[in-house]
Length: 200
Length: 308
Image (cartoon, rainbow over all chains, first blue to last red; front, side, top):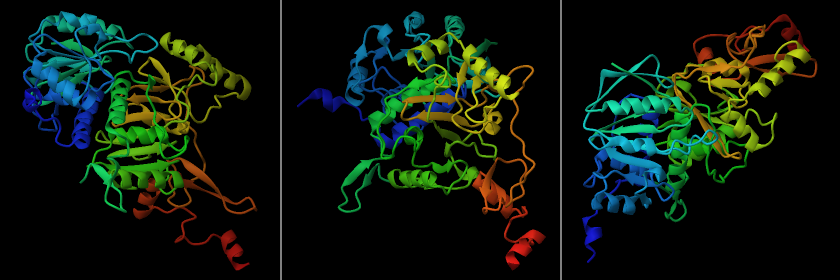
């Protein structure tokens, strides 16, 4: 008997419908930066990942996308889960990542190594999936930019100061840059590279 | 609802929900997220062959297939009309392959796929507008080489486009471009709004709905997030203006909508009618009448004709 497969958790109940629902939440989140969306599916997460990050990867990653996992995320369970359900290559080189996954308590210094694309192909950039404990709309950040009517308020629990410095630098790289998806256990929100952040 | 559409003859599964396989949808979805993050930038994607010819909306169909879910209600318009061949066949395609609800009412739709028009009715935040785009590159007729246009976008080098508009003024006294009128998105990318009449350009600015653009033959996807600044290119002394008409819609009497000209006979008689069929029908239901509506009294000239 193969122990590995028997320990695997299930993926989406309905591949077509669930991946569509997760994608629609991501599309809404990315086109309205800072607005918070509930994770539309129930999904079990392997050790090392949370439900929203798992759902995002299952909906978006496959053999064409390289995934990088931070030290605290790269458990055997997470690696097996992604390899089985997404078939995605998992790299230890953060520069190769199409999707980089980290926890907010991790050392986030790797973010400056993420691919930002180039002037002719700014889409060849990485997306950071940052697992957080809590997302709320209390006004610790005020967001402006495309997708936002006047302003959106967003608060991410325990977001370090260095993150804001990196986002400010990232914004200046436009059209290059990294997009961020915040994944709490039950909710998602996104920051597009166009979003201007004022820290209150 | 089933995820696979069954073959009616023998009940075997025929194809995946919304026609495209899941891996193709993921590829398109990744391109869509990038397109939304870089408003106005054309993201290359691995466009598939669809069961309809290029030029019939294969790009828009692929975008719709990647976005549509079982709870969506789809409206498809071609030049504003719900009842033209292209619109009817695409609506039936998704009714069959995704078993979604379809509608002709703008207000009831969650996804509107369009060829060359934006509905007259203001769109809401919970709606998505999907454009069918023939040639996504606004600079293509000025510079045929993709390597060069890519550099021009990278360097924000849009002088050539302004020269083209200036040549219009030099030749005609005004900017004579009336459709596919180039726009500047969020002060960064010049974008082709697809061959919509320039009448529709102001609706793109600050729109509450998400706008997605798919070009199937050219394999490009681009997007405008909601509430994005979209400015039609112009000059200080020749500001952008939309077309205006003396005429009203013959059916509903609208003076604020985009009108199609309909030739009535070979005597030079013609009428104008709203290109947006749903807008026109809704106005007629509300009691608005244009001079050529069938329950309007015949004018003198018409009465003479009818007597002949």
